[in-house]
Image 1: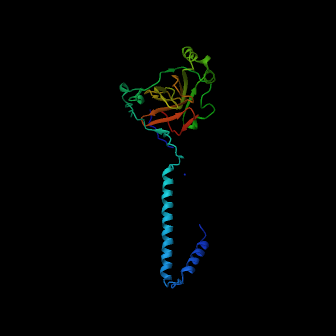
Image 2: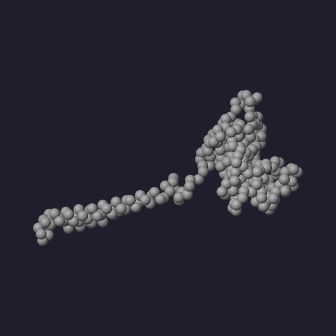
Image 3: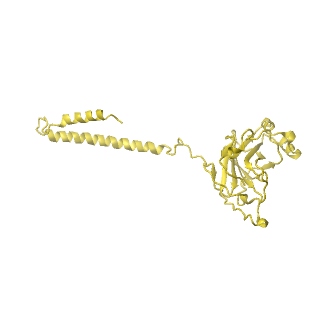
Length: 276
């Protein structure tokens, strides 16, 4: 695998205020005042201080209310929702790439070393499956990296997504025997890159909104120089008590990149300069 280039991916009018200030000066401009008790100046100051104190208390109350409002709001701009999971992160199991110049110790599965395999639903990978239409059909290779997950929940979904008559005999039989009352089918696609690289899925967790698939790319030391999309198909036990299913995928593609995508998103793309 070649080293990857990481990607990554927002007055008030012065005349009015002057008029108000002038009015205040006109009302308090007589230093002697006109109070009957001869304390006009002191009373005016007392009244002014009292008004000023009242205004300060009102402003303090307003400030406390505003602070409370800010605390109740999500300052990250997510309208109070929890922040979404990052599209790309570093694999938590910390895989290490073997030395390329040591063929005897090369491990095609190095990206999966240390990845947890439990807890998981029962699932079965199905190989040599012909897709009716690929997620990126009609798009050029210049879209960069792409990822897609599709969830098939009915026989009609299956027949629309997979060309059974052009699928390997054993795989076709497996797919035709799927009981959609207690099973679902996942189609996961990615690319572009060498067709020597393939998907490997380690566990499928039952989560609140469906299933969460964890896996990685199997990368041989020697790879073909073609530039192809990849896909894999899984038959998975249907999780209990979930009506509106979604399939989320956490896909380790290098020792420093794991990509997250799900079946509600369509095709997800990332900028890429190379794929090894």
